[in-house]
Figure 1 (cartoon, rainbow, N blue to C red):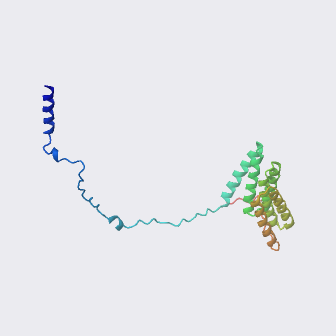
Figure 2 (figure 1 turned 120 degrees about the horizontal axis):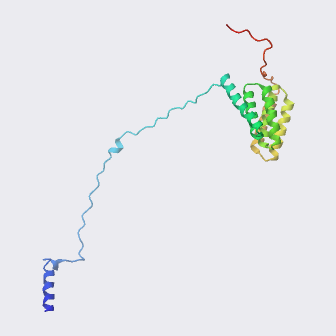
Length: 207
């Protein structure tokens, strides 16, 4: 009975495909060529976008006397604060900033005084880089006075400090200032502006 049932089931499975005897797994199937992709060059005909390169004009801010007065007052207040609370290193830089402001205005007497204060503190704090800068600026002030021997002496001291510490950039800066000093010895000294003093007699009020 089992054998008859097995033969019956096999006959049913074979009748599922009427052409099962034609099936050949090793037969090579015909491969059709691939469909060629569409070539579209329309993107190349589009205009290339040009990025504009506007010329940047640097604004020159004019430093009016009032603006310089406000800057001077701000730096002076900071310097007084640092000196009051014994922040001497920062105060030294405040003094040198004030000296630079006065030097640009050709107020050499005030620039010299603040440079000397800054130089004294930088030496006490062993801030050699700042000491070199102060000596170079002090030499520039003395050159404006026409005191070339003292200016040269300050530059020599600055060069010795820079050379002993191996600061080649500072040595080059001192040498440049030295050449400038030698080339301008024969020129007249610049007109010196001193600190303003109050008038002895008060001016009449404008009515």
